[in-house]
Length: 262
Ligand code: IPE
Image 1: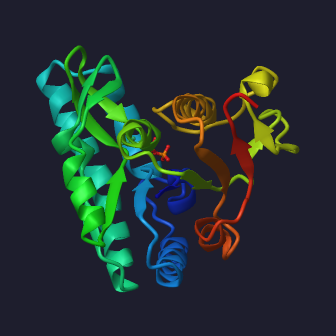
Image 2: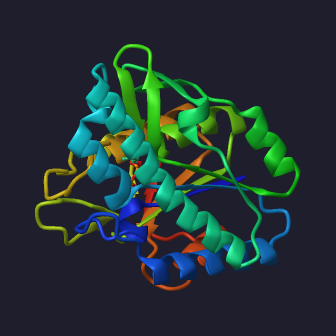
Image 3: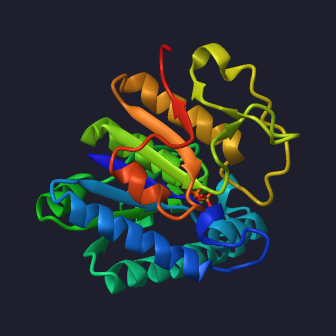
């Protein structure tokens, strides 16, 4: 089983509010469809980020920090709606290339506590896979027992699902060729990250509007996942170059490999 995330930076223009990268989304949908056609045994859980849809709305309303007032909750609904609009675009594109996606909105089945995902329905996703369909999850708002509201990133959702579904590979396609050694200069890509060299990476650099913690938090979460599932292969790579996502789904090794215990 493979989990593939299409990062918000890849499928939207993070510099402009609610701007989808239509041609990239279309190409990625084709690549996923081709990979599924080439390997009918492929069990794939697809996830996608929210980019300039959910992140802009969440930053405006502070939904990741909690909700208590009427205004906060109206903001929660606005963020849900922005994330949902992007998800709709993706689902339509997946259907247009002949895939059969089924959406699993975290906001309707996940519960968080102090920003951490505590529970999410998994059996429907398992049954979706067994039926030969394509389950799709995405970064979304969630109700939080402590804060009222929070934002769950696709990484948090994958982390929770990975524990239950035990995928062999986790693929994160973004716009950067991998994880940079130093985000302030962004020149050298680290081929392998483990706990040994994690501290050497300088994550401080421009991240734009990202309420779920930017690359540092994403790498920290993926390390945490690979620590718990030691046979798991995690890769962070760019989906900008045509064929990379298809190739990664077929077993290719793009970008940075994240490994526990290396
Ligand atoms: C963010 O999800 C969700 C919202 C802001 C609603 P992600 O953290 O998975 O999205 P990207 O990849 O950073 O855009």
